[in-house]
Image (cartoon, rainbow, N blue to C red; front, top):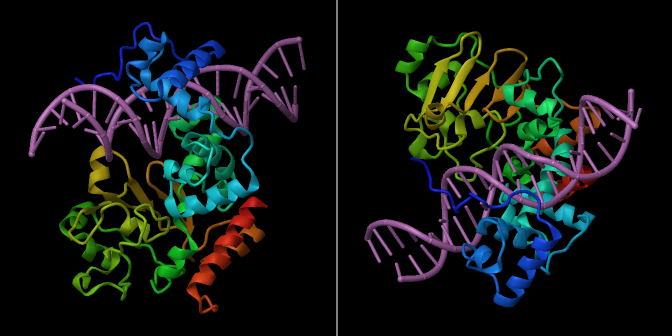
Amino acid sequence: MGRAPCCEKVGLKRGRWTAEEDEILTKYIQANGEGSWRSLPKNAGLLRCGKSCRLRWINYLRSDLKRGNISNEEEEAIIKLHASLGNKWSLIAGHLPGRTDNEIKNYWNSHLSRKIQSFRSPTDETKPPLTMESSVNKRRGRTSRSAMKRNKMYISTITPKFLEQNKERPFINSVIPMPRTPAPLEEASKLSAVSWQEEAMGGIILDDCPMENQGAPMLCPNEELDAQMLCLNDIMADGEVNTSGSLNLVQDRENSVMVVNMEERESGNGWYSASSSTNSLIEDGNNIWNWNLDGSFEGNDEEDKMLSWLWDTSDTNGDEGEGDSEKQNAMVAWLLS
DNA sequence: AATGGGTACAACCGCTTTCCT
DNA sequence: AAGGAAAGCGGTTGTACCCAT
């Protein structure tokens, strides 16, 4: 049956708000206060959904909103907050007086994601073909959106803190061989994810696992890891993947191996591919990561220098906090430049 | 001037969470 | 405790606008 609509939409106006509507809504709320959004349109004499009224008030009409361009200081704050909070726009907005979550989200997607995109510049050969959706977007002039999708997780996941916390993990900044001969589908399905991966990964053993996970090195859970961590081990650590075998491995139709989270597999999303070529494309349905097997992202010289520094886990500083802060500030400065 | 690509942002959609009875 | 309504939230879409050709 589907979900009941939030309000009766027949006869209701949609789209851009007029100045008259804004005035009616503003006066009504000034007189009666916020809340009771469902009944507000009727009481105020607006042909709008209550939800639309709420959004218009919160995002545009409130008197405490700060209009105008995002300042450098605000941008810096957004970058830093996003690095630690991810896409929690409302939380980020809570740190920026006068700014709304919608405004910050739009600013991030339209301004900052493009800067982040320059962190990784896959060559044309490694860029995946446009999907049906991205082709439509291209025609509609929405290339920035598909680019945004491919890169949206980067800054939120590759943080100096993460690098510091995981610097002992050998699959960071290390060569990770891809399986030369993927196990046939039937065989792979019989094996546990762990044993298959150990075999496929050429016996790489990660020795930083908690005792209870000995024997399941590649799936070593780490509560500090962001579920959407962008790095090769993410293939193994993403989502709710754990040692109980919730990861399912299947063979790709050609030379690559598909690793898919069962939950996502059922929904038809979340396919990860790891090709055995020099560069690997890691695709999760929304994001396509280009990964060199030597553990670096492709980019120009300046980007490479910055990235290699950010990725350098051998912090000689000795003070982890200062090292984190220094790199985070440097990354922000670089993005702002 | 017309056209098309690209950008910015307001608004919408639908799911989740919180609140209230 | 349960269930429905309201509010919150993040992702997505529509479209006005700018700029280059």
